[in-house]
Length: 245
Length: 51
Image (tube, rainbow over all chains, first blue to last red; front, side, top):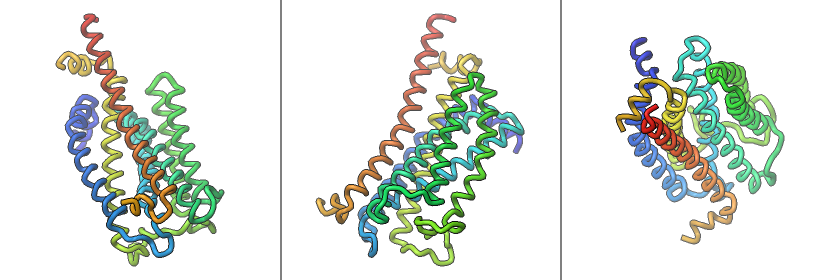
């Protein structure tokens, strides 16, 4: 197990494996995306209260889930960096940040586009929206801090601490709709005993969530390959790689 | 078809959501890919100079 961990964590090995996986991940992503879009935009009926405006949910909710998931993944990398000083974790953490920031921005923007026709306002300072906005600033903070420090080993430890500390915001976002009176609706999907959403809407929602999840790994691998080359430009394996092509 | 595009009168809210998602997903894919290719080109040039 530790041997596998060590091998998978070595930059040349990861670089090669990620390159092999990318086309497969792209194909899986395309399948989930197309079936999710078809189910959500064509097959699912209009909502009896919200009409067709609810179709924003197929972007909004998966994007919001990803904004939380990616941050937790970054905090996990932060722990690995602080404990084992693993190079690959440093790369995964910083490459995750722009993807996570994009999903957070997407969740906020689509929420705004949904809020305008349904609530009559683009924005309110309620607990769910405000804590999600703080999440966006945390992502931007990680990106800014990393680019402000030239020594990338030191920069990685700095962003690791920021990622770990910022993780307290994640349960706050999740429970914000229960702890505070908010305009944002409560959970509809995670009530597993009796989800208050019809399967014809739930199924495309889950397909889109899977599509975004696969997309994250896909975009992450692409980005990590570039970052590994940049960081290891003077190492032997990069030298051999560039000669062999 | 035009009924589909109209989204029950909510086209101005639904389609920008999907459009923005498409742009962000494309950017997070394309920008690292371009960087990767540029880096590979740089490395090959470094080799050609025989450093």
